[in-house]
Image 1: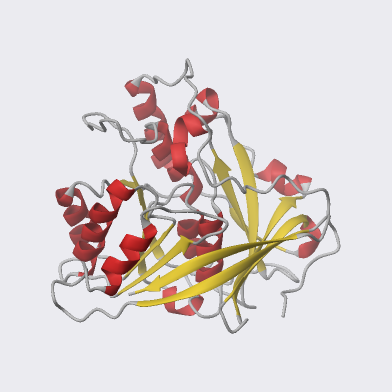
Image 2: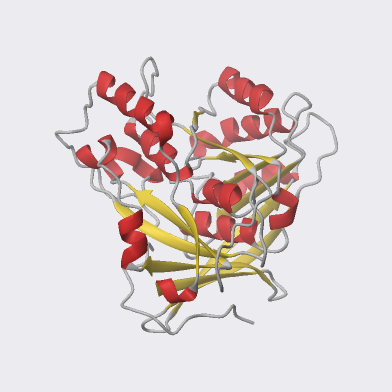
Length: 352
């Protein structure tokens, strides 16, 4: 079964299929004065918000569709990548911020189906017109020089966002505190906030004053500004290698659910990630559930994944406490609206 698709289609943009980061290029704008960064952060906190509206199929042109299946071929979630009409593009135009001043950016738009008479966090009806049962979300991507591996929306993030917006998870997320690890551009966090009506915290790691990153490939300081722009709330700079930082986030935000996508990229990060997950599921953290989506071959190769999977199955979490770890494989079909060609992406879903 497929979700309904629309006939108003135009030429698609190139799918983001490359699973390896592009080569590093020096940019003369890489060094940003810290006072300007602080200034623009304060401007954001003063009143910026993520772009999210209810829309109908008549106001967007379909680029490509994403449908997520389990092994029994049941649809777990879906979304569409679209090009909004001019009236929506004009409505979201804002004054250029610091990220756009120093780095190339692109905007991508995704629609997620929402149930009829869906209500927002305040209990008010979020559908203001006929056929308004699709939530349109905007994500701004940056260059590799700014965001490194978090510069673009990866297929795993789209799969996780589709899963959160699907019938299985959407209602159970409402009103819960959701923490996303390795948020990147923040699509799952934004989906949890706008579609699931959850209280969210986006986390990732980027350069900041006083932070020593060594030879690690870490995003620039403006990456955090871009993530805040996308999710509409202040993200947290979280280093998995710093236990105190993880404890602080765990005890202050007290997440109910922890989510993440494509987290096992570098082997050196696997042990700190396991340690971070362990802290978050302990009593002080409060997280009762975790949902991770990790890409599988042949579309993606992650050297550290086999060992990470073995450690989880061997009881790496909980310090001897019983933690049920359920793993299964999912498939996402990406269909181009113009050519009707399909790509298949495979993922490992980990539920704790």
